[in-house]
Length: 164
Image (cartoon, rainbow, N blue to C red; front, side, top):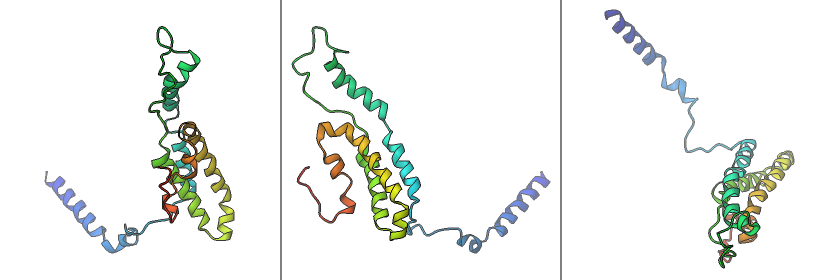
């Protein structure tokens, strides 16, 4: 028992003496300072968000809207008079996650110098299909406002509330 307490005391002293605040000061960063993100990883996150709930959205939207029209599923005695009434539909989370991510990438590339901007043009070009594919799932029901104006608030000076 005496040896265990001696070993623990020695480890505690080594830790206390070996951990100098000044040595670790250069490793720590100020939490108030924001780092610039690596745009390659931001794009990878956007692609992941593009396919977030792909199958679930497809299944529930088709089950409620497409299948009755194609007579794959129907009520006994045929479809009722409310068949063509569209109710709430499932959609991908493109407003809270995907569009801010891709619009931020586009904005950051537009703010770069000419040489750096030329190197990142391919990265910027990839963001457009990442935005368009999920928006197509919803644009038939709510129009083009999804693609044209969504996620633009942080990057514009005037606010357009006319279509809300």
